[in-house]
Each structure stands twice: as structure tokens, then as C-alpha cells.
Image (cartoon, protein in one colour):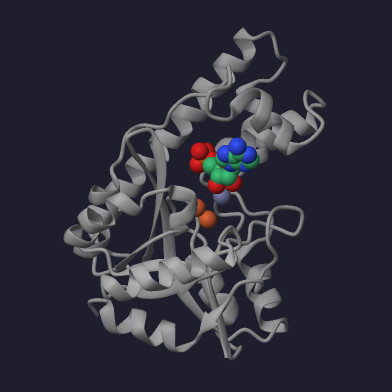
Length: 270
Ligand code: AMP
Ligand code: ZN
Ligand code: FE
Ligand code: FE
């Protein structure tokens, strides 16, 4: 029975609430769903609450965005102790950094002559973990671009005039943080991270798993990363990276057997 271990909600840049993700996952017949919002765990408790009366397990998670030599590397963390003080302090800092970055992006867009304000963006963000997708959605709403992709391609993608780099946080630091908080660190979509050469260093830092199954991975990449996972004795995880029905893959489109959930639990410090 399947588990989709990579799902975003309105707690970050997903379009569906944690409650709705749980209902959709249940309707699809999933056994488990991993809530992995960008730099926040705020979607986890509402999802768990919504799943209480259902035969669906919510796997608590996070996706931490990090940088390495100009590349974006995403580290998933499962079963982190939500009460861990160091972890809480660090994600609060990350939230502040995200908000400051969005403000700087808006400043840049305004200096390019575009009629967008921070208030416009804040209305789209609501209470979520702020990010560039919220800026993109705002630009669409204001009619400044035709769609979200155009916003990234012309204005806020890497190398574009409205691009502002994020504050530096290294993958090794994220892995150590997750481990110290009792969680299980997994390298997300390694093919898009183009980070194969980094894997030994990440394993040394405590990496426990590799996201072998992901919508961006073709068959050859799945075979390759299964071999890499076996070589370094890493758990092979996977998920849809669902953000909403208009964006990328659908919920449950990429799944792994529920045994992977049990294996993650074994790796977590309980
Ligand atoms: P942020 O965390 O604010 O840097 O936003 C990262 C998110 O923006 C990613 O998870 C993607 O959903 C989206 N994104 C980043 N780059 C692009 C791009 N070039 N085209 C479309 N979406 C993108
Ligand atoms: Zn996202
Ligand atoms: Fe990611
Ligand atoms: Fe993701």
C-alpha cells in the first residue's frame, strides 16, 4: 500500500490546505502522506488532526532549502521532534530570512517600474511560509505577467532582474540540525540538485535517505539513484512533490511502499 512522502500545503507554497491534502490522500487510498512544506512544520499538526479518524498516517516532515556553490539543494527531514529548541529557533530564523528576501524582491520589481507592493504580496501569502511562488502568484493576479512560469522566466528566476539570492544555509548544516532534533534527513530530488559529487559529504554529515522516486526523475535516473542509495546504505524514499492541481505532479502520482515509512521511523530518535 502506497505512501506519498513529499507534499506541500498552504503552509508554504501549495494551493491545498493540510486538511484538504489529508482528505484527498484518503480518497486516493494512500496509507500515508508526508507533509513537507518549505522551511516550516506549520502544516503538520492540522494534517494530523484531520487524519485522526481516518486510516491514513500523516508523516511529519519539512523540506529545508539550502545552497551549495550556487546550487539549490533541498533536504527533507522526517519525524523531527517538534519541541526541539534548537530546531525551532533555526526555523524561526529561516522564516525571518524568507520574509526579508520577499521584501527585497518586491523592492527590485518596483525599481524595475512594476506596480506591485509588499501589501499585495502579503495578501497572497496569508499566514504561509513566504516564497517566490507567492510573488509569482501576485504578479499573475495583478496582470503583470500571464502566468506563474512567465514570472519565473522573466522576473524572479535565477539570473533574472528581480532575483534575490536566499541567505546562505548549507546542506550539511540542515542535515546536522535535523539529526540533532531526532529527525531523519533525506536528500530531495537529487537529479534536479545535480549533487551527486556531494553525496559522500552529506552521508558523512548524517544523511539517512535519498529521494529516488520523484516526478522529475526519469527511469534511468531512478535506476541510478537506487544504485547510489544501495551503495551508501541510504533509504530510498519518494513522493509527488504535490503543490496543487495546476502545478507539476498530482498527489499520489509518485508513491513508495508503506514499509519505507516504518524504515524512516526506525531511523528516527524517538
Ligand atoms: P523559494 O523557496 O522562494 O526560492 O521558491 C522556490 C520555489 O519556486 C520552488 O519550490 C518552485 O516551486 C518554484 N520555482 C523556483 N524556480 C522556478 C522556475 N525557474 N520556474 C518555476 N518555478 C520555480
Ligand atoms: Zn514549493
Ligand atoms: Fe524541492
Ligand atoms: Fe518540494
